[in-house]
Length: 326
Image: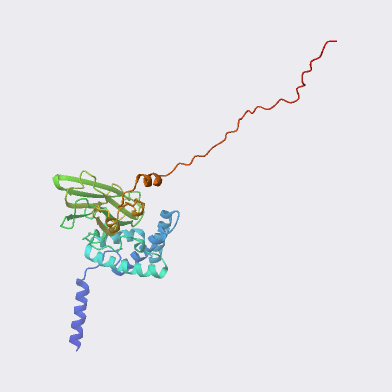
């Protein structure tokens, strides 16, 4: 028994010694999850402010660092470390999303997805979410992790004239004068036609990039779509903070087809003229006297006009008296 206990202790020590240890100042998975949960809740409370959103966001995030007794530098270093391990970081973020939704409901915070008309879309129908990649990414301003890109080939569900919306949320985990990323979308059509749209990502939490084909290309077939989000490194100590990209969607909308106007069935069966308004035809032939009597007769009205200047006898004129000379 003593030998068995000694063997178990030896194996345990070997496993501990062989497991990779975290570098100094890096948060482990549990601590990183706790910090990110409070970080996202702080972002949501800051966005609920009607004024001074940037100031409120900074104050709430600093309160998160004080709560967990870490510095902003330790948080940035941990973000860079875990973002380089895609599978581990994806698992961390899945736990973060689950806990944030539960705590937001308990705190009475209304989630933005509840008011989102595209939140419940599937990959089928005239309006569909065709995004096939992960809905989360962490971009760091270094030569290895500074870009997140994708490429999608068109299939039989795509139609000529389709419109697209690339939607996602972004959050810089810290303040910097160089917090600025670039988002770009390319649409490749037949006849080597390419359409490109781009946008600058700063402190706007919700982002949408829309593509509506014009008349020149709405009849061409789409071959593929590509895009990326790029966080360029800069010279100097004030590097951009890591950028969290979440809730990524690519919405495809088919072009509405013209619909022929529906004609009511009743209008096809009845005449537009009322039958009662047509004169009834008589089969018997009328005599000339009857025809004359059936015609409308004109009524003559004698109108006596009054003379506007009647002649009246003059009054007040003395009669002329013939006087004889005596």
